[in-house]
Length: 174
Picture (tube, rainbow, N blue to C red):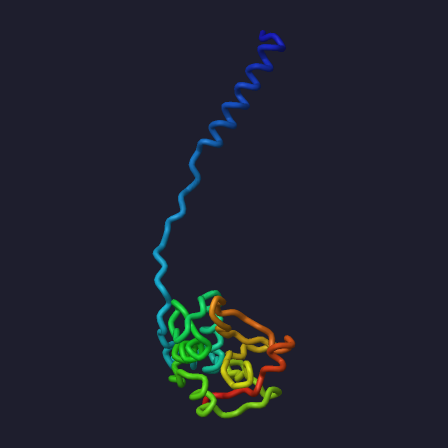
């Protein structure tokens, strides 16, 4: 029979062995996958019909997937967007060609009042005294946009004081 001191020593040694063995086992390693930048690949019209979403809803979903992508003046790819580049990209994904500039969007789109907005409508904003910014309405008083240099694609609220004052109107593709 072991003395109390020897028995405590055996228990301590056993506990230490279990602890060391458990800590030294390797966890399964995660495999890495090369991430490729998203390309503007349109959703086939047949797939859009089967899912019963509007083209505007597809465009809004495509724009939301770009949240976090950096602002880039003149950008219209997932490496960087300016405000109108994001609109053009999102609608290209949805299967509709859209003008590339803010002023061309203003001329091309059917005017829509603030109270008639639908998901996918383009929002026009007056920044520093001129119509110079666009975003894409995603519903519930929110929109996605590429705000300005040093920032990234983000979701903002229309009922915030700045954007509520700056909003001119909506526009809807014909």
